[in-house]
Length: 250
Image (cartoon, rainbow, N blue to C red; front, top):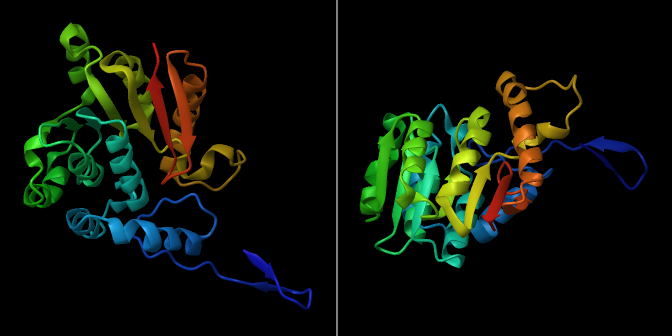
């Protein structure tokens, strides 16, 4: 990014390298994002979440983790809506899962679905040490078959206060078709990565990483569908890599 000095010529200022491994902020200034983290996120981050964030930073797939500012946001949101029965699709090492578990009352429950238990077990000792593992029902495997079984059983209809989705983007619409019946009226579904590295407004010939380009069309399709879905009120927030909140109204 070029900065103009007082003499009218241009001097090139190099953006500061961000200190959080795998960060996904959409802010143009890394320094501003670092300010947010150091001023309001890190000072309030519970010790178990800090420990899990630091452990996850050493994992080769650390880009998959939820950012610290989004973890803080989810924790506060769950308290604001008094969530008690929740679901998370896509767990990885469990940073957002731990944020949720810490926010729920002692008898709160989280149905956690992920295809890789090995990653979840990286964070499990920290979750256990935090005293919230009893709130989590982890199930390994694809989420859609589990959701289909729940759809068949009416006792699960409208039973979830909050559902967080951070998984395979090519199935987001398939998830939405099922989750809309499982979340209660007045409940919230949160879809992560809905601004997808800022790539949604990139020109067709923009140099994008292969996985970013591959999933971009699925994210665009989801955003268009949510924008016209009369069953939900939505708010798309530039937190982390973008999160869209859907409040079910019918």
